Amino acid sequence: EAGVTQFPSHSVIEKGQTVTLRCDPISGHDNLYWYRRVMGKEIKFLLHFVKESKQDESGMPNNRFLAERTGGTYSTLKVQPAELEDSGVYFCASSQLFAGRAYEQYFGPGTRLTVT
Amino acid sequence: AQSVTQLDSQVPVFEEAPVELRCNYSSSVSVYLFWYVQYPNQGLQLLLKYLSGSTLVKGINGFEAEFNKSQTSFHLRKPSVHISDTAEYFCAVSGRNFNKFYFGSGTKLNVKP
Image (cartoon, rainbow over all chains, first blue to last red; front, side, top):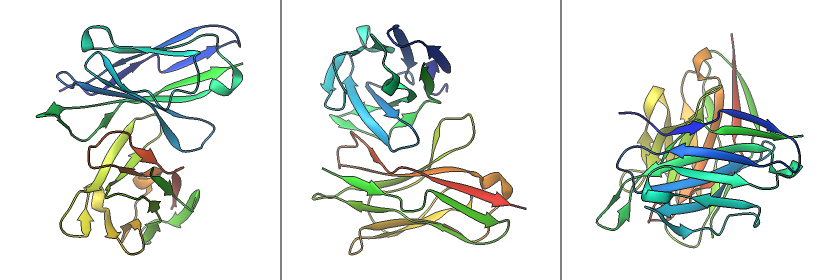
């Protein structure tokens, strides 16, 4: 069974540019999460999708970040325009949803974003 | 809300020595507890988890952790480390709904020959 995949693995962009990160969850996982680790600090929750709906986006830092999950499969996280403080590693995770209950999260390898 | 503290940002240890990585959490509700490991250039891999039952939890690669409710701790231990254990280790908590994990800032374990 394929795990959670993320693309690209690395991205280097200039301040003010736009970047789109992609996450493909494990097949059949209705829950999809985005997390971010900035500058060696803790990994922080960004948002949670249940299928195509945003269940919790309390961790999104500001309106320069837009997450979508059209069709309830893969998800994209767009940063527009990127700022220096957006640099970090963006992790995606997915989990099963069964009888209204979520189960343990499986994490992808992350996308390392560097904004110069 | 929950929070997780990993007091040691780096832990150097010699091969075959025992190691303990500390994790303390704070929460006003019952939580589930996890340890993840990230090897270089890889994603987060689940080492072990505490959901309920025995407070001593055994995980992969010879690691174990003990849940101590009174001290709100979930320290990770291994009696004898290998070079291959060199990685960064993250402690995490979640509510009973498994959503929104809260992570510590990570501990880099450096095993020396």
